[in-house]
Amino acid sequence: MIQVGRYNRLSVKKTADFGVYLDGFGESEILLPKRFVPAGLKVGDPVEVFIYHDSENRIIATTQQPLGVVGDIVKLKAVSVTKQGAFLDWGLMKDIFVPLSQQNSKMITGGEYLVRIYIDEQTGRVAATEKLFPSLSNENLTLEEKEEVDLLIYRRTELGYAVVINEQYNGLLHYSDVFRELEIGERLKGYVKAIKEGNKIDIAIGKAGYGKVEDEGSRILELLDDHDGYLPYNDKSDPESIRQFFGMSKKTFKMTTGSLYKQKKIEFTQTGIKKIAE
Image (tube, rainbow, N blue to C red; front, side):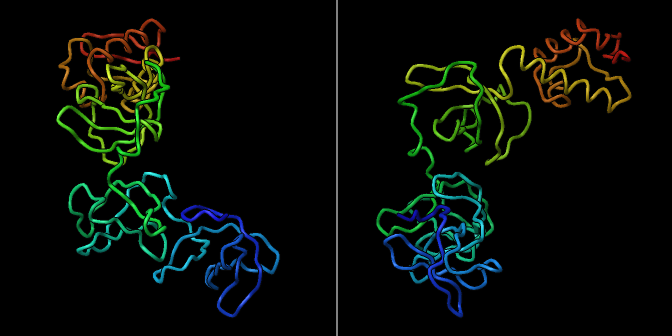
């Protein structure tokens, strides 16, 4: 069985002036248009293709690579809008459709939106939806506190950023744990800060415990190198100035500089910190 909305490895059954026909494994033969046929491809050869429906609802193949396949969450740009929905550029000649019912707010041409690619059950076509959370579930949670995870910034809320965790769970990154502006659709590493009643997950950026200190320590040393070995910040500095310059809380700054001092990598001065020459 071929998989629509995904890559398939199919064999060439026959050639034509306008392309080649691929073996659809029980489906009718699938056309790979001439413009996408690799040079030297002949009958019997296998070829990796992406399968989707063309504008006339025919299953068709392409060697173009879309920006996402079924199940992926990607950030795409709207290229046109109709009363029925919006069309987003996903890297293929035919744009992907987001029905009006699958939009969180009415999309506008030129806007960029975080969407999940799926197969519409009624039409069998590849489509996209802004409604990410119905596809996520914390019911059968396998995560543990302090576990490192992959994060995707979904949207802003009153408390913080709603995030997608490991492409399968939802969580919250509180504003108090964020020290720089984050973009919707941004991917980054984090860890499970707490699992609350009802399997609600609080997330933090970076690594837990000493791993976080190690990461921030490397960054402080890099900043020192960029500023001739000296930075005018210490434990008496204003928390907001530390947040703006280092992108971390004052507590993390003090823990990290304390660790670097114990490792004899920096020394404290009356006005800041200084890197010790190796």
